[in-house]
Structure formats: C-alpha cells, structure tokens
Amino acid sequence: MVAWLLAAAVALSHGLLAVFIVFGAPLAARSPRVMRWYLVALAPIAAVNLPGLPCPLTVWEKDLWRLAGHTPYRGGFISQYFVEPFYAPGLDARGETVLLVAVTVWCGGWLLYTAVPRLRLRAAR
Image (cartoon, rainbow, N blue to C red; front, side, top):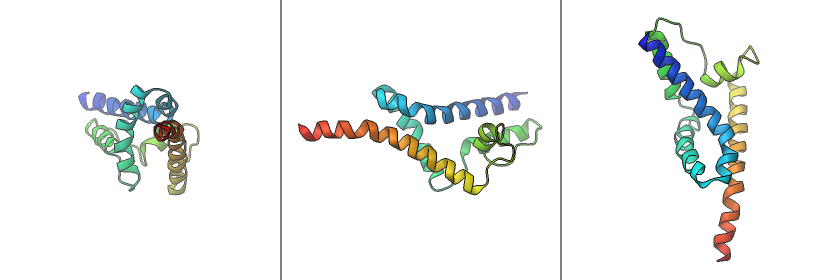
C-alpha cells in the first residue's frame, strides 16, 4: 500500500511539474516570482531531456509500481498520461522529438518575450 501511494504521489507530482512547465511559461513571463520557480523547475528538466537521458521521476515511478505489485507502463510518462488517453497508439521516437521541440519553442518564446524588453531597458540606461 505504501509503495502504491508513493508511486501515485510521484506520478501526480510529475504531472503537475509537466503542466507547470507548459502553462507556467506565460505566468513566468509576467511575474518575477513565478519566473524564479519556473527556471528552478526548467533547469533539471532541460538537463535530462536535451541529452535524451531517462527521466528520474519516470524511473522512480515505475520502480514503485513494481514494488506495489503492478506492471509499470511501457514508454514515457508524457506518452502514458498526456498522449495515450487522447491518441491510443502513443508517440514514437519522432513524435516525442516533435513534442519536445514544440514545448521548447513555446517556453523559449515566452522567456524571450520577458528577456528582450528587460535587456533593452538595461542597454538604454
């Protein structure tokens, strides 16, 4: 029971982090307080995803599901919880790359939207 609860807690935390990264970008662009938390969350995600390493949260979740006596899902977290409910076959490697690039462009665009005016203000001083 404890392993099941921990696996569910890791999955929930992981999902909230994913939602914060995508939908927190516009919020971070408007609020310096949110921006600090956003960058703190974004740094380790970038460090894992850019070189294509396995996400530690996914690994921990799957290990906890095994300890709880369940067969863990195949594939990645995003595919399992965010893609397969809407698109049953899930994502192949190309689809994962396209999704990663789309999220990177989305988040990067909002970060640039924030940074460029501030840099112009500093340059004008």
